[in-house]
Amino acid sequence: MIANLLNVLIGLWLAYSVIFAMPAGEVSNIALAVSGIAVIALATWARHTDARGWYSATNLVMGGIVLLGALVRWAVEVTALVSFWAILLLGIAIAIIALWAVLYRPEPARPAPSS
Image (cartoon, rainbow, N blue to C red):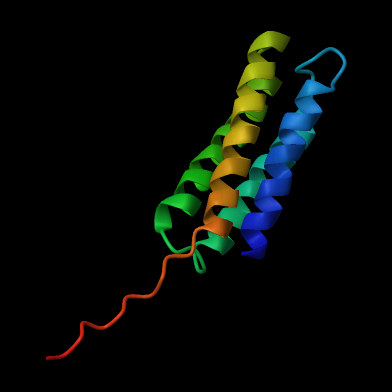
């Protein structure tokens, strides 16, 4: 649960930082790479406590995409508009999936009544 809460904060930070960057979308590649690595590490840690496995698997993939995006931005110049939308949507998605994992706790199965 702690890992997912930290992933929520990282996702919100990604969205916040890309919106308020000057110009919009210009977040440092180092910050993106560190965020991607942190999301991957926290999603791996969260796999042990998630009620369903797809929450952490989805955040693993999205953390990998953030890391890959940072590497692509180092190699090739990407326009600020493309960076803005990619980082904003990934940050929001990471936060939503992680928060969903925190809040969703299914009720334990009740035994069938005996007759």
